[in-house]
Length: 395
Image (cartoon, rainbow, N blue to C red):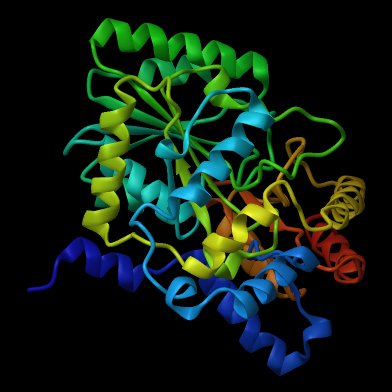
């Protein structure tokens, strides 16, 4: 008999990808210019030329027995040290290559960390809304997801609710800032207070509560908004990051886990990360992209396109009567549905060829996610459809 939970994961699928696949079929039926697919966070701006140049240089110069061979399971030691050196320059927090584990994107990094940190039946706090796969990674690690809604209307962390949710079984709090789907950046003030709360509760229960910081949108912040570096605020923080969004490399699956030196028993924690990678089969990410990585650290694609899309879309939607928290980062809007049932609202939006993702997919119903990582012309052409949808609800 097949494992029921795993079978259910396979049969249920991911709502976002299902909507995206529907969009591909629908575009063939009516023409892509007539469909407005805001479903999936797939970067639309070109990868920096230096990334391509680095790959070409490696292919032309490195011998195949080096370029296509196994590296160490956590990644090439030299590359890992260069990642650590970059992070030290950027954030002033000491870490070493011995605390870096290269992964197949942030998804693998999160799955590895949760497997490394969580014992069976221990709890993982998930401030909602959040990327739906967090529950999958938690359950696969044997943990119990505990959903803690953020506060409205600004969608900052609800510290009172988090404190109430913490128990002796709490092992991890998983944060994503800038946030997918809300676009919210958690403030330094609230993160500092959160650090104090986690420190106090860790001391009370005699076990560390780890903060797992999921950071693939770190570089996507607007209007000078600060994205605090959480290891500088709370010592027991592990970072999961990827280059999918900032370098437009989503399909190449390149990321890392950082276990900073100041994490309690950091050597054992890193060993557990390595053990989790081994147990899950997440070892030796693409050697070609590993060797290209040092040349690309600190680069970004032209993210100004997203800033323009954000401004255009936010101004228009608010004019049409839509409400949303301030989208200070990432490339998503979390728009309040114009009826209580966000699934029904998304179904109504399809009548205007608008593909939106219901808030239920992010464990915070009543809203819909709008991914604006599209070309700006598509955003402009979609505005009349959003306006017609609003008028259908009397806006």
